[in-house]
Length: 157
Ligand SMILES: CC(C)(COP(=O)(O)OP(=O)(O)OC[C@H]1O[C@@H](n2cnc3c(N)ncnc32)[C@H](O)[C@@H]1OP(=O)(O)O)[C@@H](O)C(=O)NCCC(=O)NCCS
Image (cartoon, rainbow, N blue to C red; front, side):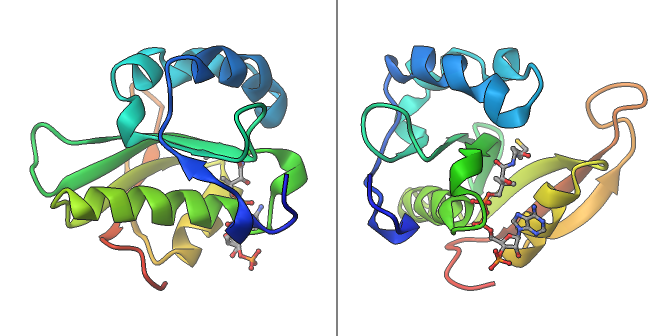
């Protein structure tokens, strides 16, 4: 594995990556989040996702899709970075790779959510030039989210 995030290999996600991701992701978040990843993002939507690093344990990965409802929109469902790789540009690289790929497919905007308590995720999205709007009860009663959007491609903040 290289030391620099810019040197990590990037590829689409494969169905076989699900088991690898499922085995590591709860430890990366320090709480059970594996069910939120949804197997369909690996089996049916893998070509839209990004896997950074070798075929074994990745430095980070992103699960996303091209919206069926809005032909201009790309959507990030989930992204995570190995704690050992954080603050080294892996998250930003995941978003840029995903954004480039979606832009090539004609998408002009990207959307992602962050919970109000997740200040790291909020700072991360702001650093990439996303603008957030608070949405009360976005994913259920009492489950507020910040809905972030920005234009594609993600060339600069
Ligand atoms: C949020 C997360 C994906 C960021 O990934 P990362 O690889 O560390 O991010 P980057 O190194 O690309 O950071 C880019 C910029 O975002 C901001 N940022 C990232 N993490 C931050 C943190 N913990 N606190 C404050 N700002 C942060 C900084 O401005 C950073 O630039 P800098 O390091 O030069 O100051 C990572 O912390 C993570 O996996 N967290 C747990 C999972 C999670 O919350 N996922 C999002 C919800 S699905």
